[in-house]
Length: 166
Length: 381
Image (cartoon, rainbow over all chains, first blue to last red; front, top):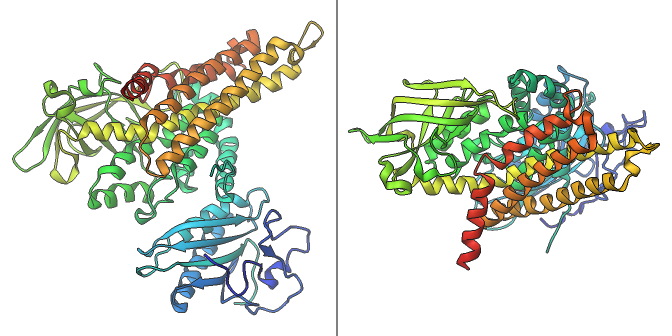
């Protein structure tokens, strides 16, 4: 997938990043693609095409390529629902894990997600929640079938702390 | 272009499997070995976090992970206990023939079932009178008037035999036809005439469930025929071609465990006034372990990488299986040697590793059968 007008230099959601004052990191140090914009304090998408906020999860659409906006937004809503429910469920069996990840996914002609590039916050325990609560649901997304052309989407997600007003 | 760097998603997968092995498998491995018991609660947990059935395609609800991805999972879980790992991941052996040859209806029903519930599938080729000689099977499949088949016979050494909810059973319409008579059938445990036997009391991998399966007048409707007689042998071989690299990965995990245990022990244990790690003959054994680990990793990843690209190369699959299993056995023997007398008692983990390693040279085609496969291809070129 080629770069959007934002390129891959994407800011994470500012109001979620602002909660990292305890020293915990919200970004993937190894990645040069994700930049924290800790200075922001509004709930606006801040350059994202769409942001879906839930109780303990937020999913932001950085780019949707050759996917209708309403379809992409619906997919982000589904991901946010799945992430929120999964993180909440897992918190019943252990501590609430905070994490962040970004996914760039290619959508095939059949509408299935065919390839993903994933970046995950490297803190201990985050990988498991990212795989189960975000990557797995993302791979199960289905889009309308289409012939030819590169289709895909890029999202960033944060989870594990109260997100604020919806 | 070669690339040995795992993706970030693969690193996350490795981290998840490694944590699971450390937190859920290692603490109970010795107890499960002693009691010859498979921990079903661990299976349910592994299923819940996606470590079971990793290669089921997304269209059937699975994670759609690659064969390379699965070797990472296998290796990490095997580090904890190859017995528990074998039963945790044996669904792959049961689901692969369905993935390869199933109708859309069969895939939706059985692959979907494996994903939606923590149930087990088992693969049944071996019999009391044959194992690696698949073409020599005696279990009979007799066609009935409705297009289905009636199965009669006994299957032996079936991983998860007492626990599985369904089986992929290979049977022949006529034993004299050898490989040309073999078919494959999906048999549900709840069907009349399906009788799982007792859990076998084994030398190693005692935590994995292994049992006999008796089939008495089991009526298999046409919708559960996976491969008609004549097409089953090829399906069995293609399945092994896909799953054999995983045996190498299992050996890889076991070898890494051996090396870690030996390094820790060799640094502590003293002989002739110094830690035995300072004795060159001990160092040589540790170095040989490391060489085997690295060589097995390359073979396993190459075999799995080829499978992910649709390259059919049974020789590489057999090399990965044969070398990985032999390397694991030798490494485990050496681990016992490094531990000396303490390696021979159950207070330390390496005697279990040695018992566990042996079956890697036997199941899914013995070490000798792998060499037959390899030699046949070498001589044919």
